[in-house]
Image (cartoon, rainbow, N blue to C red):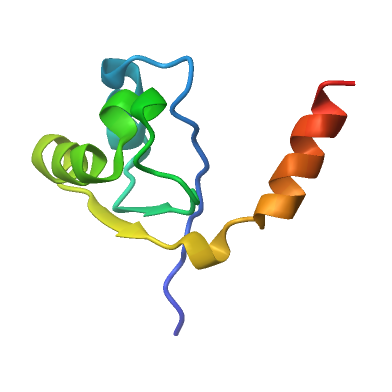
Length: 86
């Protein structure tokens, strides 16, 4: 028998740390898979890789894995940003 897997998505922009972590905990998230290519940007604040790993574990008991191989390529991201601006 296969266990049920639920997939959630969440962004960190325009959210406070309190709102971000509360949403994850209330949803019952067990693991965050971070697919960002650049997860150490100064713009990320509480969501920088090492901070996020620490806060997820400490605040919510949530596992963290960085999997940039699952992210869209830089070329796809650039095209998205260009189209979004039009």
